[in-house]
Image (cartoon, rainbow, N blue to C red; front, side, top):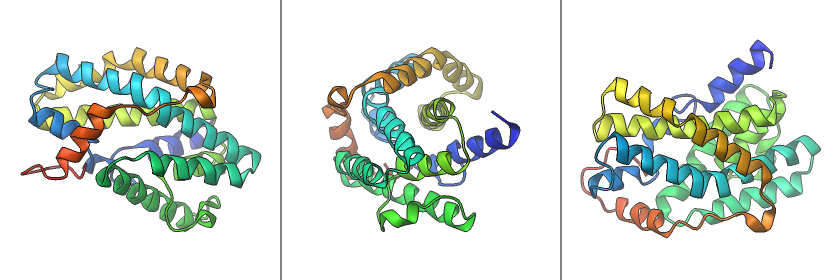
Amino acid sequence: MNAAALLHLLQFASPALPIGGYSYSQGLETAIERGLVVDAASARAWIAAYLALVMARWDGPLLWRLMRAFAAGDMATVALWSERFIASRDCAELRAETIQMGYSLTRLLDELALGAVARLGAEVSLPTAFACAVDALAIDHGDALVASLFAWAENQVLVCVKSVPLGQVAGQRLLLSLAPDIEAAAAVARSLADEEMSNWAPGLSILSMQHEVQHGRLYRS
C-alpha cells in the first residue's frame, strides 16, 4: 500500500474521526453497568467473543461483500447487502448508529468528490459508506477489512478505559493482546459463504435494548 492510501485508510477507519464512533459503545456500556465487564480480563473476554461471534460472522463478511461489489460496479449487490445490514440492527440504537455514521461518512465522501454512495438513497449503512471509500481510494480489501476490525476493537477498548475503568497502559496492553483475534476474525470474514453468515447474538441484543432505558448513559448505544 502506498503512503497516501495508508493515510486515507487510517483516517476513515479512525473511531475518533471523521464519523464519531467514539460516542457509541454497542452494548458494552450496559455490560459494564450489569457487572459483566469489570476488569481487563473480562473486557478482553467480551471483546474477543464479540469479534468471533458477530464481527467475524456478520459485519466483516458483509463489508467484504460490499467492497467486492463496489469493485465490480455491481450497485444492485451493494444495495442488497446494505439493506440487509440495516435490517440486521435489532434495536433502535444500533440502527440509528449505523445510519448516523454512514451519513457522516457519506457527507465526507461527497465533499471530497469520492465515490457514488449518494445514489443509494437517504439511509446508507456505515459498512456501505466505508466500502465506497475503499473503492474510491483503491485501498486493498484485505487491509481495509483488518483496519475496520481494528478500529472497532480500539473503540471498545476506549470504552473500557473510560468506564470500567482501566488505565491507559492496561488499555494498550489489552488492544495489543487482541491482535490474533482480529487477524482470525478477518480470516473467517473472508472465507464464509453467504449461508454461513450469522449475527445471532441474543444476549447482545437484550443489552442493547436495555441501554435505551439505562440511567446516566455516556454513550449513544
